[in-house]
Image (cartoon, rainbow, N blue to C red; front, side, top):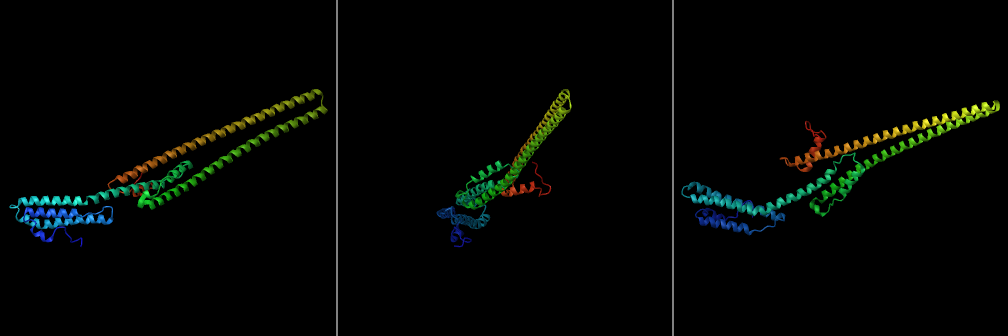
Length: 337
């Protein structure tokens, strides 16, 4: 029968429904019996549609009864005060009957909405990884990758399984991409440090070899002088030359020692500069990590505030709004981190 015209009440009984309290009670009992006699399975689409249709029929029955009772009540208000009281009671009881019939559908819809929201919130775990800021260390990124890898995307996601599989794949791809960049940057830094170390070792070896060669040249020169003096001068002159040679040798050793001290001081200064550079680099990294954590915290708080606001944004939409404000895409709006 057409749902738009089918009423639970019997059409031929409507004209006499308000003739007596008995007729009203009989009509109400018949309505309740017929409404409650129908059973529907709220777990199926057909059952939920049947419940909604039955509730509408009850409402239309109430309207049909009211359409007859209202004029009679207006015409005979003083004489039929008790009738008006019962009419209002009938309306309330029919409303209650409608709510009673519709309650399983309302409960199912509330449960269904909560289930869907739980899946959507779970999807945000993957979406949040897409907001990972480049510049994190490889170890931190590997930890994030392992965390996402451990998240199951099986049948427990129900109709959201395909979305969960896709979101997890995108999050993994994003994290692996920034991991590759982080590893490349770390490798480049390590290579640069190795080149600097090799350069320092070569320079130390060159300075040492040069100093050794200089000492040997001075020794050779002194020896040559000694041999020349031995041929032309007396023993005293030879002794004097030997003393001179020894003095020059000592002076050469002193110069070598001075060069060594100068080299060691330069190396110490270089190590100090390297330590200062490493300390500054660590401090900058720690500050960047704190800034990143603060930024993520503020980002999360702003997103939560938008989700909880009266505009009732979905979390995914709230994430995009906060990202747009953060990127200064919306004039006059800023986020202070």
